[in-house]
Amino acid sequence: MTSLDPVLEVLDKDGVRLTVEDAVATVTLTNPAKRNAQSPALWRALAEAGRSLPGSVRIVVLRGEGKSFSAGLDRQAFTPEGFDGEPSFLEMARGSDAALDAVIAEYQEAFTWWRRNDIVSIAAVQGHAIGAGFQLALACDLRVVAEDVQFAMRETSLGLVPDLTGTHPLVAAVGYARALEICATGRFVHADEAERIGLANLVVPAGDLDGAVRDLAVALLAAPRDAVIETKALLRGAGERGYEEQRTAERAAQARRLRDLAGQSD
Image (cartoon, rainbow, N blue to C red; front, side, top):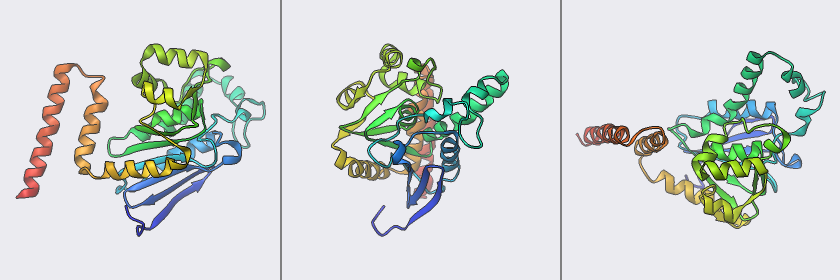
């Protein structure tokens, strides 16, 4: 990634812009006037961004324009009129169980692709990351945060649950007891605590956020792509495998790498 690499705009719709510069893609939330509040249209655009990534992309950076990463779900979703052209959440709640499950599953697609083994995703988080915003940051592999960051999971306080894939990575990062306390109280988690408990990989001054993310991307690109893919798959599966199963997975992955390297040297 150099300053000479052309920046390709792949997508720009419904509050989401996807640009690609060589091996690094950037997904930007582009509605700072509403603190990048989220909607079904934005979720569909995020899912489309994932499907639109060129095969050359190794790193995906997620960022939000303005002072806040994302203040969460746009409260208009809970009004009787909802969003233009969309069923309101109240209307959806009156539908069948199957229909409601299908709609929520569609919304979750915006949050699932960030952990694909062929990419490493980095959330650059400043200001508010609340509810759906917190879950979107949790969807990424790594989080670099500004000193003014404010994470909060407000769903439980509203009589709901975090349903946009945020519970699994939250528990993986901070443990069950702390995750329960964060969700059930809806309190803010600030930068120093986020770094201490494992929510943030790095905390920097707000003005240094973009530069710190660029430096991390460069460091991640230094290793061969296939080795990173295999390592990420091993680490992601470690929590579900027993010790002996993980040993077996490590041997199989290393055998693939050795054969590949041997083939390159022939």
